Image (cartoon, rainbow, N blue to C red; front, side):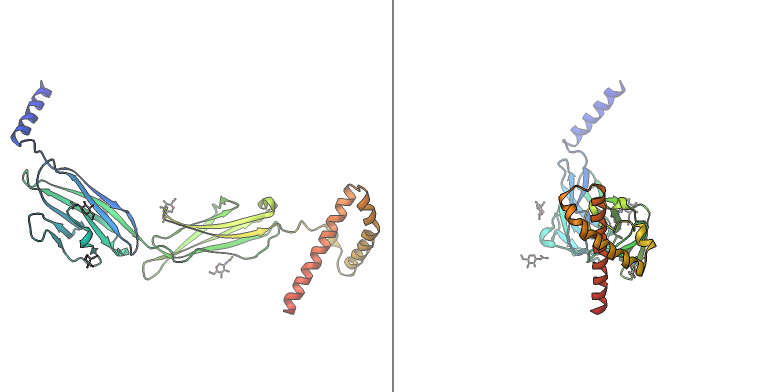
Length: 306
Ligand SMILES: *[C@@H]1O[C@H](CO)[C@@H](O)[C@H](O)[C@H]1NC(C)=O
Ligand SMILES: *[C@@H]1O[C@H](CO)[C@@H](O)[C@H](O)[C@H]1NC(C)=O
Ligand SMILES: *[C@@H]1O[C@H](CO)[C@@H](O)[C@H](O)[C@H]1NC(C)=O
Ligand SMILES: *[C@@H]1O[C@H](CO)[C@@H](O)[C@H](O)[C@H]1NC(C)=O
Ligand SMILES: *[C@@H]1O[C@H](CO)[C@@H](O)[C@H](O)[C@H]1NC(C)=O
């Protein structure tokens, strides 16, 4: 019984207003919702008038009206000066507003308010938050305290982002694994932008060099709008020092090296022809190590010389 009377009641309404019911579905679409400082945003106000004539569309930032469309007035488009708001009149009409040169301070709630002439100036409002952001002007910089590490040493590094708003998210990765134990700090500048910096400390282990390389990366991002990466590669540390090299030093070491060279010269022909197994492997290893040390010394000398 109750349902039936509601049905009858609404049919009565439709008859009374000749099929014209109230304005509905006022929606504000913003493209894009996150605007890069200095760029443009389009605000589109859609609605279902249900056949009623439009009286006005008013546009607000916060509580301040900045633009109005009233089709029955002359001119039909009016701008109310609001500092920092630049309406492109050529691209704005009863449905949309194009805002140019948006600056950071303009981030906020924007609304469109639609009024229908009938019935009795029904009004609906829709609101969207528009964010205005500033991207960093430079890529992130990643610095480490050394360019080569031995297992057991501690790598300490920092990554920083040039000023941005909101603050960039900085994440440090070691071989594609994000490092959790990092320490991030923000610094706000006078112009409202933030510099971000992250410090990490990492105990270096041989396992961090799969395929002979350890890659440190710093990814700076702002939402899914900005993403830049800085990279540092570290190569396999020299193998663990052998007992001989620790216990022998000075003259004794030189003596060992000379002895070793003679030994090598004597045995090399045999090594070349025969499979010496373990001994052979060890010899070549040692020979390489000796060579490394020599070239490192040369490099040091040339540094001192230059
Ligand atoms: C609008 O168009 C007119 C003529 O086409 C042009 O002179 C004017 O600069 C335009 N204004 C804007 C804000 O683009
Ligand atoms: C308003 O302008 C946009 C583009 O400038 C256009 O696509 C749209 O049809 C216009 N709407 C009205 C009601 O004039
Ligand atoms: C924007 O509107 C939402 C909900 O209407 C409100 O929670 C928020 O505080 C407003 N933001 C600003 C900057 O006024
Ligand atoms: C971190 O950055 C500062 C400069 O911003 C530099 O002086 C310092 O040496 C860096 N630390 C490391 C471990 O790279
Ligand atoms: C930073 O990361 C957090 C967590 O993932 C996210 O909620 C936030 O929106 C990000 N901020 C920026 C500026 O990208």
